[in-house]
Length: 262
Length: 339
Image (cartoon, rainbow over the protein chains, first blue to last red):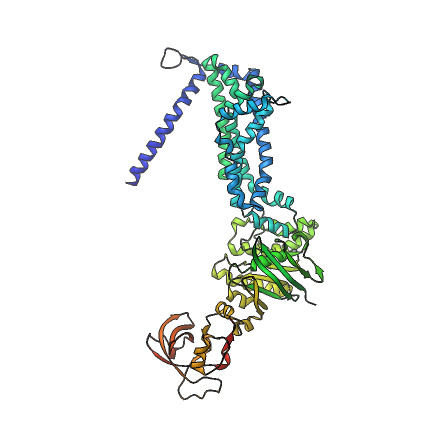
C-alpha cells in the first residue's frame, strides 16, 4: 500500500516538474536552434546565438551593471543589518516582533506604486537621483532587508546570543570582539544563504529598474526588455544564460542554508 | 576581613524589585550556594556579582577592592552557565583558550595552560572536538575549564547541572566540588535543588522573594529552619499549629512548630526512653510511598495529618493503610518557626 502511495506521489511530483520544465526546455532548444519555424523539430543546431550574445558589449555591460547594483545593495544592507540584528537580539529581544513587521514594509507597497512615489519624491531633489544607479541601489537595499533579516535572525535564534556574549565578556572580550569572534562565525550560514537568495531575486528585478532608471543605466532585465524586438533565438539564449546564473546562485544559497558547506 | 563583601546591594527591573539591600560576606575558598525557588532573585544576584547586570545601589568588594563599577571584563570572575554557552565555532581547546587569547597570553604558555585544564576536567584527547560533538556533561566540563583557566578570583556557577541527566549530575557535582577544594577557589553556586545545595556547600544562602531568609551551614539550615518557608523548602517538615502542639505535647510555642519526618520513631516494646522523648501517640496509617531506603507514611494522629519517614527495615515494612502505630516524638527536635 505504502509503495503504491509512494509511486503515486512520485508520479505527481515528476509530472509537475516536467510540466514546469517544459517551457524552459523549449526555450533552451530554441536558443540552440538555427531556425525553428514551420517544422515540429528545429532545422539545425548552432551556438551562434550564444556567441552573438557573449560578444555583445552591451550585454556584458548590462550584466556588469546589474552585478554592481545588486552586490553593492546587498553589501550595504548586510553591513547595516548585522549590527542591527545583534543589538535587537542582545539588548532588546522584545523588539524582534516589531522588527519583523517593519522589515516587511517594503513588500507591503507594490513596486509600481512605490516606484512612482520615488519618482515624484526625487523629481525635485537638489541632486540627481533618478536615472542613476544610486537610486536603484537604495531601492534594492530596502528590498533585500526582509530576506536578510529573516535568514540572519534565524541564525541568531539558533545560537544563545545572550549567554555567548556574556561568556565572552567575562573572558575579557569587548562587545565588538565578542561579536567578531563568537557571534559572526556562527552566522555564516544565514549570511551566505540570504546573500545568494536575495541576489538572485534582485538580479531578476525589472519594475524598479525600468521605471526609476530605464535605459540611462541599462541593467540586465532592462536590456532583456529592450532586446525583445530582435531575434527570438537571441533573446532565448539571453534568458537561458540568465536562468543558468540564477540557478547557480539559488543552488549555492540553498546549499549554504542546509549547512553542507559551513 | 572577608574576601567578598556585599553591602546593601539593590536591584530592580523597572518597577519590579528583585532584591533590596542585601548584605553578606564570603571567605576565601568558601563554597557558597544561593538556593531558592525560581524567581527568588538568585540568578540576578549572581549576574550582578559578575557585572552582567548593573546594580541600582550598594557595593561589591573583592579582596579589599571595590569592584561595583567594573565591567565584567575587568572583574576577573569565571562563570559557568546552565546553557554551557560554549562557542559553537570553536574546538574544545579554542574554547578553553579564548580568554587567554583575549589577554594576549604568549602561545606556548597558553598551550600548556589549556593542556593542564583539559586534563583537570578529564577531557584529554577531545581537544579538537567541537561542542556539538560532545555530550552535555562534557560540554559543561569544557565550560568549567574555560572559566578556570583564567584563574578567576571567584567562580560563579549558574545552575550548571540543571540541564544534565541525573547520573551525570551526580558525578559532575562531585567533580566540581573536588576541583574547587583542590584549587581553593571561592565559589558561588546557584541552584533550586536543595539536595545539591546540601551536598556541595560550605554555607547556603537561602533566598525567597529577593531576600536571604537564612544563611548557614547545610546542617544548621536543615535542622533549624528559621521560618515556615525554609521548613517547607528544605525538606518534608510537618508544620504543626501551636494549638495542636499544646494538645499533643503540652508545649507552649509562640509560632507553628516544625517536626522533621525522620525524627519520629516507632515505639519499641520494653525499651526505656529518655525524658526528651514524648509519650507514645497512636497514629493510623493513611498511605505510604516507598522511596527506597525510606518509607514515607502519611499518618493521622487525632485530627492531625503528619508525614513520618521510617527506615525500610524488615520489621517495619510497608504497613497497609489503616494500620495502627505507636509513635514517639523527640521534643528537642520540635522547632518553632516564625511565619
